[in-house]
Length: 503
Image 1 (cartoon, rainbow, N blue to C red):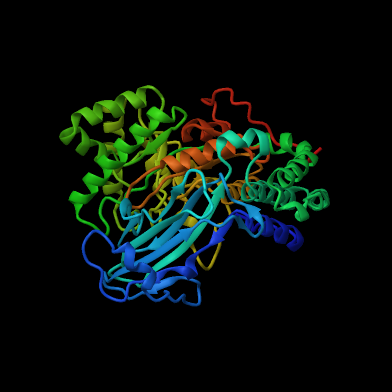
Image 2 (image 1 turned 90 degrees about the vertical axis):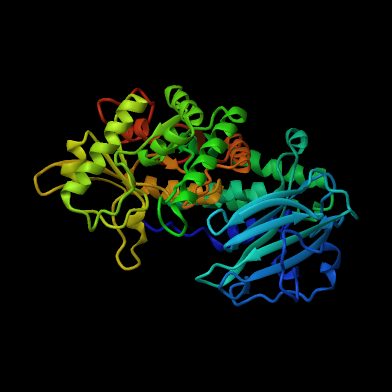
């Protein structure tokens, strides 16, 4: 992808100032347990007496490698305001990101969440409605990776406008800042002359009224209203979300763990689909489904029903996501044969996609083998990992030595959150590279399974309602790829090039 043009510093500074009214970095105020932490709980009542944990030059709390435990504690007492902005009645979340073999989060002594080196971030609700003067104690029990130092990478309080207030006052300042960051990203890429309109609108923020929430929010609504003509220009673009949970079948854990993680991931997705009917999901590796079929037949039958209902896709093509550097042609052919045969027998159709987001290296003969297996698309994001030469294409035709050609698609990053600015940046660069205003996004915890989370889906609903974000929808990869490549099998999608300029 081409590098994104820079947003002017004046705009960035204003957006950062807005974020500071509803977001607070709390990495530097954790107390570190001075003795080894054992057991499943932490003595939260004594944590305030522990020394403060130092930060390294990257702003992280760090501790030695080798599965060494670390205890951290912090008590949050809600102030009346943050940099002058009133906090009463807002929802308070704690956003955490760690680099740890295991992470346990405790709130007021109650265990709230477990994570690991792959399931490495969360946003925990500490209060549904902030009452100044009340406090919440949070304790963390972290175990460093065996091969690397541990780190608490992010700890940030995020204050949000609750849904009941949104219709009257609009979203919190941090949300507005992200909306305008999305708009600035697209303007910088496609019509930088219009950035002056954004700068002018930002001048209408009533900074002297920050302490009066109603008056300050009215000024933010006026800014949004002044920029409303940009909304249709953004909305003609579409971000197609597809839930995903990359799972390496054999890497840093026993194979038995792979089967358990797959079961947990699939059950989680099916449960979330009951509460979020818009959620679609894809997974590769028929080998996983064969194990589920043999050991959890009821779960497998439910997955089959979800596939039939169009809410779940088996984007596979190959039996697993294999290495494609060392195996010979016979081994690759069998990967395709076994994978496609299983998909046809169990799910009623072969896969159109060779879904290989994390495979290292691809043999020149792959187009011939894939097309002979009924596969139309080669999809990966691993080609972006080169630290020396950037792969120059996002949508391309790959031709093998025998003349066989297959459409290649560079996927967005895997293991991603619903991060509006990251999503817009990726989609914007995709559009600049390919000319297409329809882009894919793959939300979901990955590498060790996991998939989409409830918080991701709630955040997606928030951003789908924003006038300053591309149209956000849920769908599947194959019909999108058909439309992008003008495959005759594509149904009418309404995909049209965006207007080159905002109104």
